[in-house]
Length: 106
Image 1 (cartoon, one colour):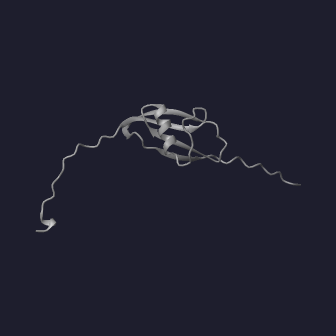
Image 2: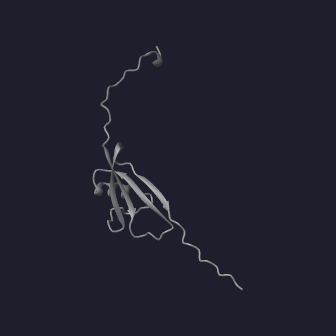
Image 3: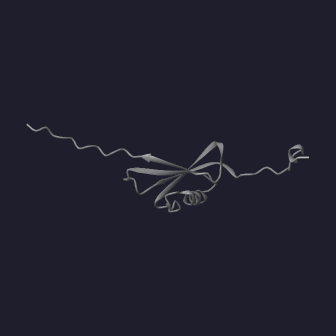
């Protein structure tokens, strides 16, 4: 008798529980507003400290989002549930500086 003929026994397992929240934290650079582009972090978390720690751990550029002087934080309550620990990094390009006007030569 081959293994394919035997029925597969199912193992009952409890469902996997993941922590969720309705609160999103938006972390934005506070000091480097003159850079060509800025990156913000959107982090689901219950507290600002947890959001900053998650963003710091997940940042591929190695920035320390826990620095309250360099990065401002504000929270948003949403109707959707978000998994705590997910991070979205989003780049926001800045407007180029206005070009100086040329004067016509007579």
